Length: 182
Image (cartoon, rainbow, N blue to C red; front, side, top):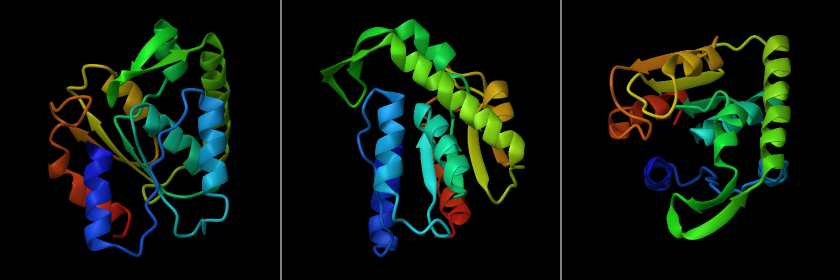
């Protein structure tokens, strides 16, 4: 829902901006390889990344790898821990008829990415202009305090209430576009 809304606004108001929102594979290593390959020739000084939940974790990783700004929407700070309970066959949230198998090795891939984030974040002090996080205290899936710590140094907008999906995203979309200078 959030990606569709952002895509529609980018297309309507900023048709010169390259918008890319691929359906990523379940393997975290393959997912990030696809993103890095797909953006390899993009100019880093004008590139930005936006992600929600696991996508927020990925966006933080991409941002630290490339130096581009990131918007994190209820980012998953510890996906290796949280997704380890979901090993096995799963359905895709956007299409319940689509199934995939979440393998135990994917948890290990997430642990590697978590270590990358911790190492890169330690060596590079995040500034408010590098990172915008929109975090819902009412998130029923993730702990807002963990999300806030994950986004340390960036600009954090704590929402009283709301939910994991940020159902009131329309109220926050202007802030996202302002942060992205669009």
